[in-house]
Image (cartoon, rainbow, N blue to C red):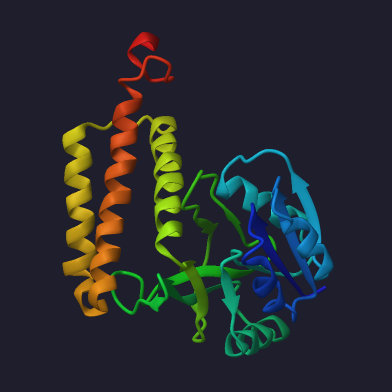
Length: 258
């Protein structure tokens, strides 16, 4: 078996069909579903994926390592349910996995959309993500959110983009801001990192300046401004939630636990 595509899901019925259809060239598609209630697992099975369901949610990194362990291919392609492999990217991946190449790890340029607009600045482009690697040469970090690929050796780059439909509307922006900031605050707590209200404000302001000015988000127009504000809010919420953990009696870090 040459290529295994792995996808982790939770309530991704709106995305999973197009995602899996773009992976039709893979020798196997492994879907690790985390207790979806919207029919995601059933849709994936009908499209020929090997679906395993899990009742727990240990975080993105651990879950992706579990999916990796289920795959059988010599090469692994890891993508998210809201990502799509273009025909051009498919051709490049097939060329890599069928040739005797020296590199074992490949990064792919990702083109992401925000509320219907593809963003070409704002720190979103160029956005190279490591998604293709030879089995045994890489694994995922155990981070709750924003997991990393752990590997040794050089990284080669593919040219064709991976399409990332990250935020189809503003409701999805707000939902992800809430979920990711909560996971980020929990990760800070587990890593022994502290926060304060002023630190939350400072990090939020810096996130806006970095996105809109340093990374030229203003060139993405009005939605570039909206994205910079979203980044600032997400950063502020993460640090503020971590700060509030130390002020909540029932929290593991609360005053009654010290």
